[in-house]
Image 1: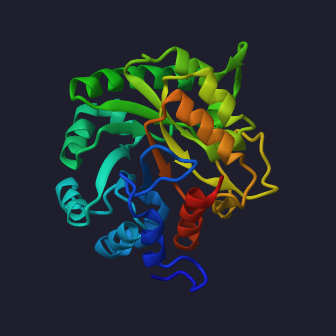
Image 2 (image 1 turned 90 degrees about the vertical axis):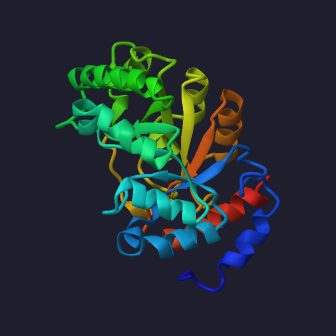
Length: 285
């Protein structure tokens, strides 16, 4: 382990998490909790087995994928299996969903994924209606094909989708024009707040559409109301140290039926911050 001695040790984390059915949990987050492996992308790029040892040592059972780090899907799946980790979901590039969704679904089958998604819609300048409607067509096709493969397609929010449109936003258009049974959403609470939106309000506005959630806290004083989908990664801070109302978000997420939660800490010190976030989930009231 590379985090300072004053932070939780692996053994300390394991002790906190022992006895929970999912390997994690707590007073706030009542659903299965995993880690988006993008959180440790630098480490994964050079040492997949060692990094997965670390992830397992933190107590995680579930993970979400964002690539396989120059390994074949089968080889990467074997590494996950060897470490007792289950990949529930994965992100795949928009261009792949547009051009060859069947290939994506074959890869997801090898990896054993239940959820298959997209985390970014390419666009130049401000996100607009033309691009949104193109994405809607791609997502509806992907959702139908995923259903045929007994998987669920989802789109991960990034904040730029909240450009004003008619009496709402382009995000409202994405939700309303996609098949509610075949296209779900992954709320990233950081990016929702970064765009000046309220995660609780959106959870309650579209119940039944939010199957997945990315958890991260936002550094106090971070500017919001931006529609860029871009922020300094150092604005990701441990749970409870930032400006998001996590208890309220967890209550709303539980009420609308979020199925899986994933910590995603994009900061350069994620290895230090993830154990702190886990402690917060266990101890916060």
